[in-house]
Image (cartoon, rainbow, N blue to C red; front, side):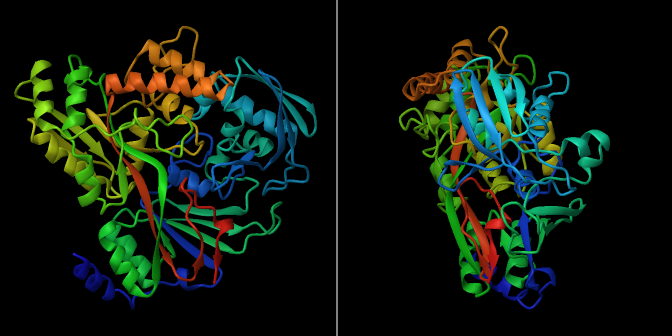
Length: 508
């Protein structure tokens, strides 16, 4: 296979394209396109990777996982339910608007407005109110102690109040932020173009022009890299690693990711679904050989997992997250005990090009489930439609392959955000990804979110992991290792949170 890749790419080596050869322009290829231009109404890394170059957050997540003041210059806890924040002075939006405390308050009011919830609203359900103290200071009041307040700020983007409120939906076509790059144009499914903001408060970026291109097919991304059409590609497929290294045009760079890959099992898709039975769900976990998938489909670039956390994340417990053993005999026994001795039929959705060899992983799972009598029809969909169905709880299949990159580095973002079932009276609503309703689980997750003692939070997350282990709500697959193809002219080191901050890049 490597020889065929080398030969194929060699035939394209002379076919350069203009943009990636320009000394002032970098071209980055992801597997999928941006889906929305409101940075606080999305939960997707490819979209955030583009928008994070236009918009700034209040705190910045650093590569080592720490949180650094950004648009906010500092935060202090006055008491367990009151926080005070100071805002950086002299910052302007791309349209000339000033950043003030009033701007920041408006952004939070918009997110916590119950009449118009956004994708990130559930993460801020604990926030009761925001008060402007003076032009550079705000006071936040929460309903309960909020230990993840600062880490949540690393994912909260700031929009210009006047521009948004006075121009209707224009901000959804022409985004304006305070970031190092300004929006130029977006041609859907073709390219997203940015230009450097010379007046950026953090200093003008080194690269003047940026183009993001969505290229779903892995072979096409690699061919573009080798031929000079793009400078960086995400999700470099393992079978092309040697070809890229041998090309002389690009290098391979990798980093263990914060992202875990799994199959969400839709237990509520239809009455009397086999997936509503925990024995069936446990059987499916025993039926999937994760180690073989990592070895043969991912080329060894990954680690099998048994939960939605990994070792980067506060609250991770190695024993509770031990991968389920591959035991098809036990899987058949569990199916028989559940009343399905001859298996059953189900459907599985998968994207193509969003995650590392995602479609191929799904195909491998289909084959392995077939060995225990579970007949699976695989339906591959275009990403924007696919993720929209997931986020709106309109999944048309019995299961979907998905990944979650926890860029908050805290279990709250992987457990509460993915599994909270909304069973607590007077508490937050069920999250988009959850198809399990467990009172003990929800209570543990809410208590952990409202407890400031780190050791107590660890114990509560351990309780939550034990409930999830018993319920087996999903088929847990692997922690992804991120592989990038990078042109040799690019000076850049990948981050575990998958962010593509172009201001951190330079061209040699």
